[in-house]
Picture 1 (cartoon, one colour):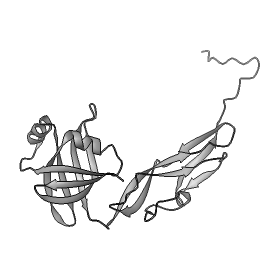
Picture 2 (cartoon, rainbow, N blue to C red):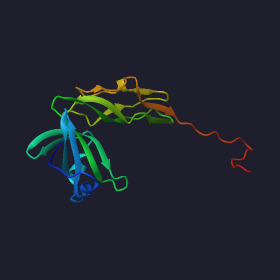
Picture 3 (cartoon, rainbow, N blue to C red):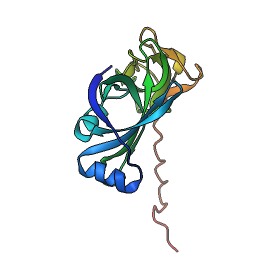
Length: 194
């Protein structure tokens, strides 16, 4: 898990015009909420935040005008065409607190010889972990699996202190046999004539 320190500034201007001005200054408008406290509207340095959000489930240590807060990204809004950050919602967390997050499922190994396809039914797994020890991803071996095999959520090894937050019998991966098209019988045409 990655921990990134960012310096935040509180903001008092709201609305589209204020947000545009903030983004022109290479900053990102954000809101920090959680633990029953009033939401705090802040601005964050755009480039540093963009780099931090490349890491899944990053833990942010925010310095908000001399006060330190731990937070995780809850919602990230990006421009649909250019991809730059428009707004970020951050959830405050405390050390030792459990949070529910999604982690990516990575595979390792080779399927059994033959024409098989691996279908990722779920590309992420919802887990509960301590806020300061959130795994970036989980890895499962697919070595030797044949057509018809499935890997359930309960079959995926989780890091210590991490528990499943979804149905343990949910199918995460399944191996399918490749379906080949039948060759046309002799004398049949493959084109459709009207």
